[in-house]
Structure formats: structure tokens, C-alpha cells
Length: 125
Image 1 (cartoon, rainbow, N blue to C red):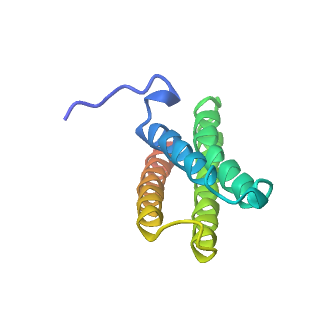
Image 2 (cartoon, rainbow, N blue to C red; image 1 turned 90 degrees about the vertical axis):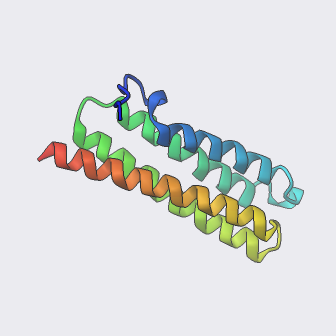
Image 3 (tube, rainbow, N blue to C red; image 1 turned 180 degrees about the vertical axis):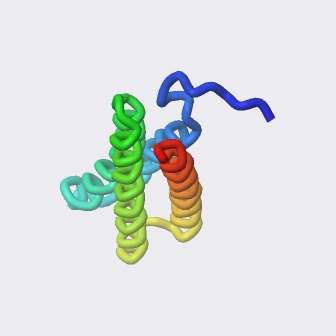
């Protein structure tokens, strides 16, 4: 299998999938009650946006340790997003099928972040 050269954070599949997740989260929150505009809608959007933003910022840093730290922050934001989505389910703002799709996307991104962190950590040693 041919390795794709990563010239930019935009070449990273994990960044691309994170961007897709952001769009899905904005689509979801647009359907929430207006009373949630400064509550869960804002929290979900902020957490979702933080994932690709931290991947990009870390990739743009000059030091490998900074990159790994930003990937860890992205992973933390991912877990925060998952928690918000589970709260949304309890409030019955989301259908089970949609929640399952979003949580599967979160799990996939989480695995990718973990793998990238592990590979970079090995490189750092």
C-alpha cells in the first residue's frame, strides 16, 4: 500500500472526518429548541469545532511534543462531544438512529487520534 505524503493538516483523514462531524453537529443543533441556543447547541458546536481545530493547530507547531499535546486536547474535546450527545439523547432531542451514527463517527475519530498519537509518540522516543 502506498503511503500518502502529509503536507498539510488538510491531508489527514482524521482532520477530514472531524470536519464532517462538525457539519453533522451543526445540522443536528439547528433542530434543537431555541431555548438551547446558548446551552447544549453552543456546547456541542464548540466541542465539535475544537477537534479539527486542535488537529490543525498541533500539526502547525514546530515541536512534536506540542503536536501530540494538541491531538490529546482534540481527543478530550471528542469525549466531551460524546457526553453532550448522550445528554441530548436523554432529553429526547435526537433519534436513536442518528445518535448511533454520530457516536460511531466519534469512535472512529477516537481510534484514529489514538493511533496517530501512538505513532508520533514512538517517533519522539
